[in-house]
Amino acid sequence: MGFPSQRARAHGKRRERGFTLLELLVAITLLGLITALLFGGLRFGTQVWEAGAKNVGESAEIRVVQAFIRREISQVYAGASPVKGAGIRTAFEGTPKSMTFAALLPAHLGLGGFYLIGIGADGDGGEKRLVITWRPIKLGIEEAPSEGEVGKAVLVERISDVTFSYYGPSEQGLLPHWQDRWEEAEVPPSLVRVDVEFFDDDRRSWPDLVVAPMIHAILGRG
Image (cartoon, rainbow, N blue to C red; front, side, top):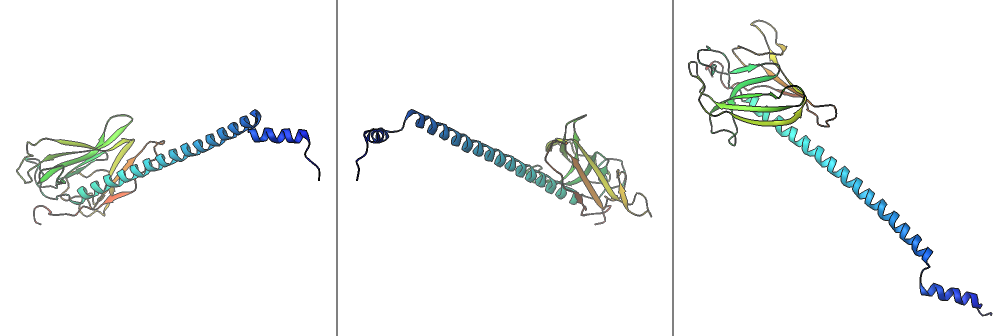
């Protein structure tokens, strides 16, 4: 059995002393690449998570707004007009871009009783907002609106447009159909559709919203 040569012994001693400078540089470079890859993956994952959380949050916001609108429209009061001297007609007026009706408000918005509620777009031109306004009223044939303070709140920010349509007969004897106005009618429409549009670069969506008002009273006869 032979003995290791002097060169082999010297090489072994250098290995025992540690890495060479070249080996150390290679190790540092590899470590840097691995760290960069890990950091890039972590940052990408964080961005995906944040985008997903934002989308979920915005979707939840839309659902809450739709539930609120559905609740208010379903509670439309179909009685006499809240406008003094207007005669007997429903407290519901609808146009393509807004609607006004009498209904109850949630406790955190109102102090009880009926309110004249308006829902429509706020803003001209480009970016708009879906807003709700409310004012306490006294329902009755010869009673005028109360002098209460008008409240206002934003339901949805940054919308492109909003459109309202109403289902019911436009005149006595005609078959019900969708129309873009509901004015001076004796009863509320059978159905109300609310369509909100967003800009093309907006990921939010507005699910179909069609609400059937629950008539509490028709012309005061119950």
